[in-house]
Every structure is written in structure tokens, then in C-alpha cells.
Image 1 (tube, rainbow, N blue to C red):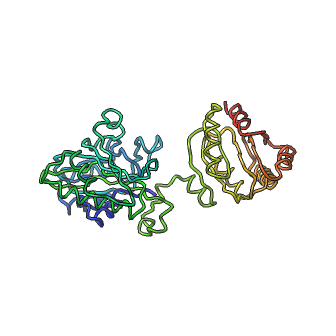
Image 2 (cartoon, one colour):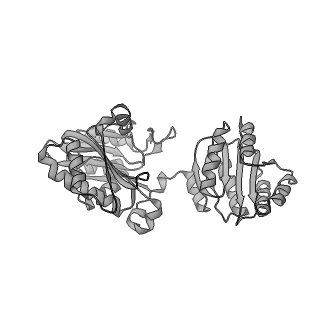
Amino acid sequence: MKIHEYQAKELFRKYKVPTPEGGVSTTIEGVENIAAELGLPVAVKAQIHAGGRGKGGGVKVARSSDEVTKAAKAILGMTLVTKQTGPEGRLVKTILVEKGVAIKKEMYLSIVPDRSTATVTIIASQDGGMDIEEVAAKTPERIIKVQVNPLIGIRGYHVARMMFGLELPKEVMKEFSAILRNLYNLFVDYDCSLVEINPLIITEENTIIALDAKMDVDSNALYRHPDVLAMHDPNEDDPTEAEAAKFNLNYINLGGNVGNMVNGAGLAMATMDIIKQAGAEPANFLDVGGGANAEMVENGFRIILSDSKVKGILINIFGGILRCDILAQGVVQAAKKIQLSVPVVVRMEGTNVEEGRRILSESGLKLINATDLADAAKKVAEIVA
């Protein structure tokens, strides 16, 4: 689960990772009051769950009270579009105001799990404040990586490699060492999948401050972190994904034109792969789970069809706990109830599969039986072509 920058900074301060003084508001008057208390200049920052806010006009430096008001009016209520929001953008409802700091040097620092090596990987660069993917692509030698065995934890040699790799001045080495260790502890304690600071700055006074903050906590571990769960902002949720979650459906919008309904995450991945191999594009990932019933199938149809780009649907079900004949009855029942408007290709295997196919064939609906997964992908790709 992602949290806002100002929320991540609350946790940073709890772990003694320095951040600028600041406050948040949802009104222009509130922004003005915070800026007056902090003193000018200030940074006025849109709070959405996406990076690239500065390039999209969501971060402004204000050096006078008039500029504070102008920045607040420009940002609050804007639909901020960045590389990470997609073309639809995100509505800005909250603003973070922070006291301005004199920057001497900008760096990049992040911590992520690396599943391929079963380590926690610390990534840093002297090229802070920039798009780190661009830095990695054009100047990979500027990226430093240190892998930490999570069973041993961060050690002095890990910190030393980072400090010398970043060519830090000796005046800030002790402070950096403490910050990196504290940030690592935060990452582990909160079951994070990402902690990122871009930029991490050295000020003119030779202190280190996290000017930005990004945190993503593994959703499977949220039961251990009620303080993070309380930070959930429903305004940042995809409306369709939130609707699916109400019915215990795992749904992710992918932007293609073939709707998918499967039972099992692995089957979903395989289905999406073979759809692409057949020349079409999956519109979504929708997993109804092993215990799907007619109501879940109906809700799945309704959610898939709420995407106007969907021109055909592929149902790929393994009939184990859920028998194929029961699934077929559920599909027919749901298709009649919601007045299905696009063709549906159904691939089933497992218990009572022949009976299931008979039910679909005799339904009189646009339900097309497929003999196997390749056949299903080919048929649905032809439909949406």
C-alpha cells in the first residue's frame, strides 16, 4: 500500500531521518497559514501517489505570500498528470507546505527487496533529483548498489561502500551513516516493498535532509501495521479496483481490449501471456478465486464490462473445487442477468467439463466453447481484431 509523502515523512521522523519542517492542508487558507508560520521561502507540493509531480506542475517554490497563494490556487484541485498517473491524472486534494532549504548537493537513495538474490538492495546515486530510470539507462556507472543479507542486517562495510561510492564529504559521513541505518531499520520494521528519497540533499550547512519521501508497504503485512493502514487514502484507489475488492475479486486494469476472468493468479498470468502471443491485449487481471460462485461471476462480468475498451471476454477456469458445470450455470445466469453485450470465449478443464460445455452450448447466448487455452486465445483475438 502506498502512502503520501507527508505520511512517509512522519515515519521518517520516527526513525530519526531528518526532513524539512512543514504541514499539510486541504484549503488555500490553510496553506497560507502554514507558510506564514514556517517563514519564506517554502515549497508547495501536491500530495498524490505518483512521482514526477514537479515536471507536471505539482511542486512550486514560493518566495512571497502572493506566490504562496498563487501556488496553492494552481495546485489544489488540479488534475495532475505525470508519467506515473497515466493520461487521466490524479485530482490533488491535499498540499504539503515545507520550509525552504539551501541545497548544496542532491543525491538519490532507495531500498528495495531483490527477490532474485533474496537480499535487501540499497540503491544510490550522486545524480539525485533526476529520473533514476534515465540515469540508469544513460549512465549506469553512476548507480551504486549494495546487497544486504536480511538475516545479518546492515553492517559497517555496507554503509562505507555507499559513502565512498557517493563521494560524500567527511563532514557528513557520520550523519549519513546514521540515516542509512535508520532508513534500513524502517524498511525492515514496516515490511516495505520500497523506501525512496529523491532527492536526499546535503545543505549549505553540511547537514543531510530527506527532501522527498516515497514508501510502499507490502499489503500482505498491513495487519501488522495499523498505523500505516490508518493512512490509507481511498481517493487514490482506482475506482474499479476498489469496487472489485468489495466482492473479494482481485482486479487490475491493464488498458487492453480483452477482458479476462480466471480462477487463480498463476492461471491469470498464463492467460495474459497467451492473449498477447495471439496478438491481442489483455484489458484486465481479474481473479475470482477458487471458490467462485454465480454472484462473483456476475460481479466479475459487470466490472469487466464497465471498461468501454473491452470488445471480448475470455473465461479461463480450472474446475477443481469449482466444478465446470456449476461454473457454466453461473456464467449463463450472470450473462442473462446483465444482458451480456460482447462475445465470451470459455475455456474450462476439470470436473464435469463435458456437462459444463453442454450448458454453455445450449444457452443461446454469445458463449463460445474453446478446446484449450491456445484455441481460446486465438478465438478471442479474432473477435477483438
